[in-house]
Length: 145
Image 1 (cartoon, rainbow, N blue to C red):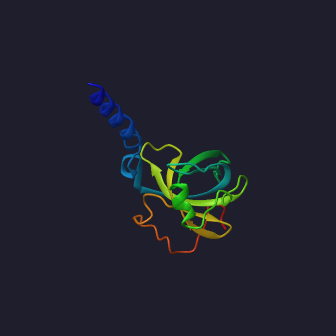
Image 2: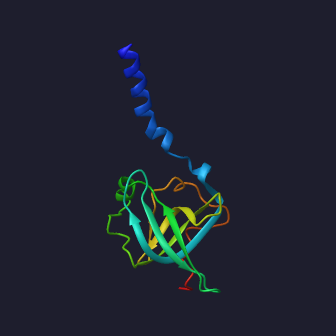
Image 3: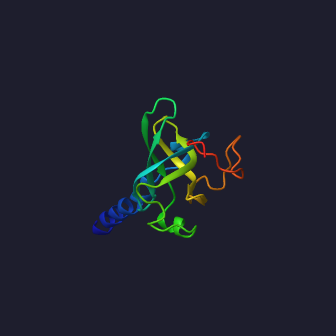
């Protein structure tokens, strides 16, 4: 009886991380590619995903929208040259990625341009190119630079 209860508890405890993770396709739409430039307002360097939050100003209306971008894990980012200090609050960055399926201001980042350098985001879509979007072209951001 004790062995059965312990085994059941182990299954529940060990399966929680698996159940809490999500698939890219369930949350993000690879056909809704975007490239946004804004000011970094927050960085969460944590497992299982790092998040960068940026404020993006609409050129036509002047309205500011806060966006949350999911990147890969800290270890995945570190292997691509990132450190916890790479993206700092107040910096202007350009993020290329795929918007959330629900149309919210959330996206999965594919690349982040920081100080003119395009850095891979260690995300789920790193090896999945977008339809109609050439990531080898020079970067033209939403500020017209």
